[in-house]
Amino acid sequence: MSEKNNAILRFDNVSFDYNDGANIILNEASFSVRENTKITIMGQNGAGKSTIFKLITGELKPKSGKINIVNGNSVAIARQVIPKEQFLYTVREFFEQVFDEKDYQLDMKINNILKEVNLKTNLDKKIKDFSGGQQARLLLAQALIQEPDILLLDEPTNNLDKDGIGDLIGFLLTYLKTVIVISHDADFLNMFTDGVLYLNKNDNTVEQYWGDYYTVLEEIKNQIEKEKSQNARAEKKMKDAKEKINYFANKGGKMRKIAKKMKEEIEEVEDEKVIVRKDDKTIPNFEIPFDNYNGPIVQIKNITIVNKEGELQTNKVKIQLKKKEKLLIKGPNGIGKSTLLKRMVNGKDNDAKITSDVKIGYYSQDFDALDMSMSVWDSLHEMSNEVTNQEVYDTAGRFMLAKLIKSKVGALSEGQKGLLCYARFIIQRPDLLIMDEPSNHINFRHLPVIADALNNYKGAMIMISHDEEFLSNIKDVDELDLSSFL
Image 1 (cartoon, rainbow, N blue to C red):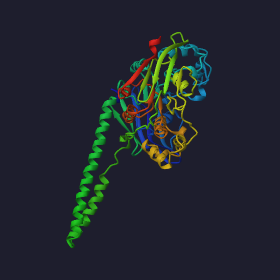
Image 2: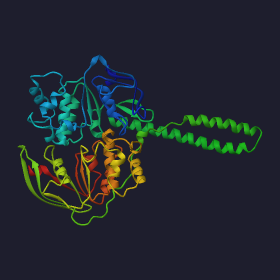
Image 3: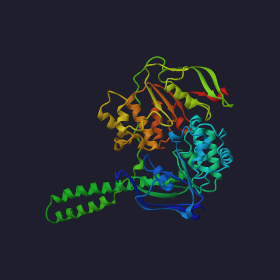
Image 4: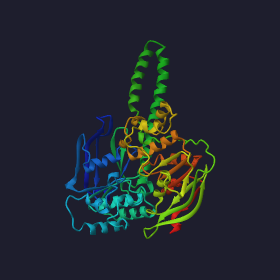
C-alpha cells in the first residue's frame, strides 16, 4: 500500500508569497510524498499548484521552511506549454537543453523516448511546426529522457486527442516511479491516482488525502458540507441568543447580568465558526452577448490538412455558418486543426472566409490572442471603446480576477488566463467564437458554467476540443471529422 512506502519528498513548514506578501501561496505548509506513488495536486485557478512545482524543481525558493528531496532524488517536469522563445528550436535542440554535457548517443535516446510517447518525427523539425497535441508529447518525452525519480506533470492532457490520453494513461499505470500531476481532467486522474494534495486557499496550507481521485473529491465535498453545517448551527445559536439578550437587557436587575453572560457566550460561538474553503467557489453563470448579426458569418470552400505522409492535402467542402450554428472540427493531433483556425483568425486562409465586419472572439490553446505585457485592466478595456470602468471591474470580479486587475496578463496562472478570455468575450460581444480547446487549463468546477455559456451563445461558433465530457454539455453541434479525408 502506498502509505507504507518511504517518503521521497517533504515540505516542512514552507511559506511562500508573491509581491512582498500581497499574494500568499503557502503559510507553513507541511506534507510528504511517498516514493512510487501517483499524487494529484488539487486547487482552484491561481491557488499555487504550478508554484509548488517550481518550488520542488528549485526554480523558486521558499520564504521560510524547508523542502527536502530525500537522498538527492532527481526531478524533471513536463510543463503545460513550450515557451515561445523555444519554437525555433529543432527537436534535437529542445532535448539538448536539459543536459549539461554533450551526449553522443542523444539522437538514439531521443528516438527511443519518442517511441514511449508514440510520436515519430525528424529530429531536425522545428518545434513551431508541431501541433499542440504533438507538443504535449514532446514535453512529456523531454521530462522522461532525464530518467527522473520524481516526475512532475502540469496539465499533461491539454491538447491531446483521445489516443494521446490513452497512451498517457497506459504509460502512467505501468510507470514505477513517483509522479505528481496537476490536471483538470477528473476521469484521467481517477485512472491512476493514489492520493491528493489539496491546496486550502483559506489558510494557505496543504491538506493530504489518500484514495482514488473521486473518493477524495467526495471526502472534500463532505468536509465542506460539514463546515457549512457548523456555521449554520453557530448562526442559529447566535440569533437565538441575541433575541434573548434583547429581552433580558430590558428587564433590569439580575436579568441584565444574564444578558451580559449571554454576550460572552455569543463571542465563544463566533469563534466556533470556520471559513468555508474558497475552493468551493465557482464562477457564476454568464452570457456571452451577441448583437444579432444577420447573414453568412463564415464560408469554407476548401480545407487543407496534413496527410499520413506528412504532406499538405487540400479537400473541397461546402460549409456556411450563420448565427446559432456551431461547428466542431475533429481529427487526430497533427492533422492541422489549430493551424486552420489561426489562418482564419488572421485572415490568411483564402478558402475559409470570415465576413469582413464580423467581430471574432478567439480562444487559443496557447493564448495567442492575449498581450502578456498588458495589465488585466487594459486587456479587458481594449475589447470595447464603450465599456465603462465599472463594467470592467464587475466583469473581472465575475471571473475571480478583481484582485488581479493591475497584474500583468503574463503573471496570471494558465487557468486565470483562460478565465480572462471569457471575461473579454463578455465585453467584446463577438459575432463569431473561434474556440481552440476552450476547456484547457480551466478548473473543473468552472467547466459546466462555461459549457452552458457556449451552449446558449446566439452567434456562430467553430470549435476544436478533445474534452468529450465538456462537449457533451454543448448541444446542436455539427461535426467535421478531418480524418475522413485521410
